[in-house]
Length: 193
Ligand SMILES: Cc1cc2nc3c(=O)[nH]c(=O)nc-3n(C[C@H](O)[C@H](O)[C@H](O)COP(=O)(O)O)c2cc1C
Image (cartoon, rainbow, N blue to C red):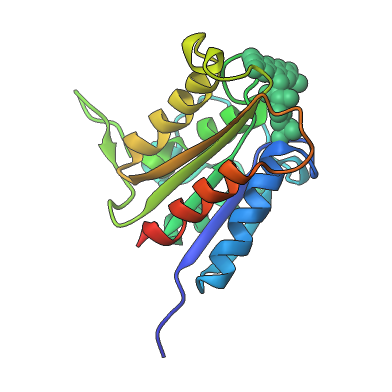
């Protein structure tokens, strides 16, 4: 029997019914139809201490502190695809997402004398979702959504994973997922493999 591909869906918003959560829910619906084995993580339901900057993870390939980052680290290493959905906070990601990145340092990369060496595979893909109040094109022109995407891309790019696309819900005051977002998400998910 063919093994199902593992999809890790991470929510980095405190709003379970907010914009990024709606995007992620829709993506998981599509992914389920496409036969993925889905693992959902809501960062706000997890116990993840701040990174101490001890750098032990670089030798251990995972954080030395035993909390919920261990579960996430294992899923990150095993999955075929990660979808990270996080809103724009100050033209960046929410602190909880940034802290997850910090705690994943040794999972993602190896330190060398020059450039970081990736620890994940180019067979793995990452997809990014974000939402912000600033409407387009100002969300791009003023670096709002682009700031959050840049921050997320930096980590995954360094890890060696391949970019699978992104979806940005600008001017996200509406409560219903706009059709253009649904179309974009549908396009990203099946195209991933
Ligand atoms: C602390 C904080 C900072 C924010 N910073 C920005 C920002 O820099 N640019 C922007 O357009 N929206 C900003 N927003 C608005 C959110 O990005 C927007 O409401 C988003 O839709 C929230 O997504 P969610 O419903 O998935 O949580 C900020 C919101 C909060 C709470």
